[in-house]
Image 1 (cartoon, rainbow, N blue to C red):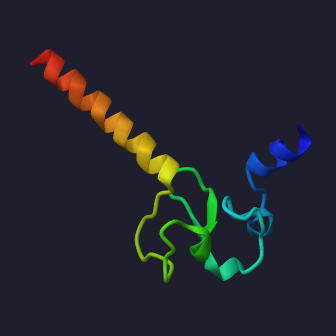
Image 2: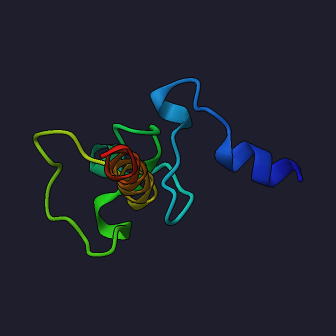
Length: 82
């Protein structure tokens, strides 16, 4: 319904970003944005928890899984062609 659409809609500003773990937007300096889908996560809501914001790119678990499936498809296509 309406609440679900709001939780998963694109944020308009940084103030609109909500943690995908607790669905709160507080403690903004501790929210990490996924470089794949822009989902926000508090450092302390992740499993395992992170102690600091990563210096490089960071991907949420959903994007890590999506990227792994994509790489597996590409590998399978290369093997099928060989």
